[in-house]
Amino acid sequence: MRKVYAWFGLAFAAATIAVWSIPETVDARTRAHASAHHRRHHHRRRHHRRRVHTLPVSDNAPTAELVFDADTGRVLAIANAEQRVYPASLTKMMTLYLTFRAMQEGWLRPEDTMMVSQYAASAPPTKLGLYEGQSVAVDDLIRASVTESANDAARVLAENLDGRFGRNLQQMLRADLAAAQADDAADALVDPPTAEETAERAAEIADMQALASSITADGSEYDFARLMTLQARLLGMDDTLYRNASGLPDPDQTTTAPDMAMLAYAIVHMPPQYYSYFSIQHFNYAGADHRNHNLNFLTHYDGADGIKTGYTQSGGFNVIDSARHGDRRLVAIVMGRQSVATREADVRALLDAGFAQTGAVVAVSAGNSDFLTVGSTLDLPTLDHAPAAAVPLPPEAIVPSAPTPTATPASETRRRGHHGSSSTRSR
Image (cartoon, rainbow, N blue to C red):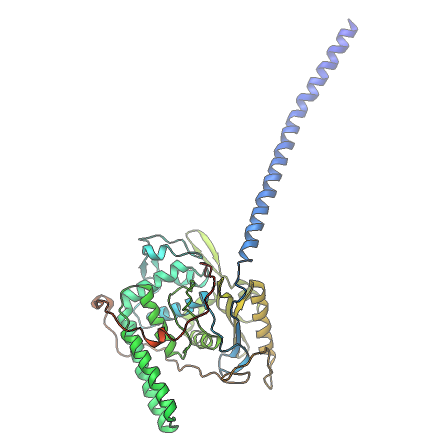
């Protein structure tokens, strides 16, 4: 009987130990499963972030760079000044410049809303995720274009500006052209041009007049791109052609580093309420935080206050950055880099070298140019950001004329960019 009791006791003890061990085993297995899930999820997140920073770049992406003093126009570093490059999302700088000019004229307010078309909503990334029929505040569209570099937001701005204010903008730019002609006449009295210079300038004026006449204000992005190109010509951007408002790949949409310097100069000298948009670090929309693609520069470079990044596969990684040290403001333009890291490193090195120059200007980078070298002074545009004296007709009173076949202005055919594979991403 004692043996029976002994065996019974051993069996009971074994069963008790087994029962006590079950929760520990289940808990351990649960923790192990959770740990494995965390590792897999963490790996996926790390892999996703890594992919963002290894976007493909064409091996033959054209490169250029330029650093200049934003007050004097003095060139501190330059390379490949004549190289035509793809602006990518630097294109949005011109879209926003015309937006700001419309706001300055009083035609548009930050709290006004714009309707999203199916075409705008279908824009490839990067984008805000707008949907057809949605009504979005102008302020949100500007912030999205600056921070997220949202292609759908840029399209909304382009279509609405062209459809509602296309005739106003056309009239404004024609007034700018007339003012430029008056300046030419005044300059000619002081310093008469040669016959060759006169003929060349006459051709430029005729080119801009033809471009202005081709604008139909039909509410299309393509027509708005004509306004962008005309504004570019008036700023002295003779080698820039715009085909869209976002910077999405188009083989004809090209520019040069000196041309981008003209646009950057015009933007940094806009009233602070407009230029300050380019220093926004975060933008919250529909509960999502959108970080500025230029955030690292804005938060880690002394005196940084803008401006814009860009990327396409065919054009590489581009950036235009502005910083102020004391009473000096420099602007650096870096085009066609192979990665975000090299773009960041190069723009910082160029700005550092520019701010370090206190006496004679020393070349920072190699490059030959017949018309611009280190120490040259850019022929910066004359800016008048005061509202026009004559108030154009209100948008609702303007009836767009029916599109008529027009000859393509020379400004739209003079440049044919480098043809190559292009990513649909513009950022």
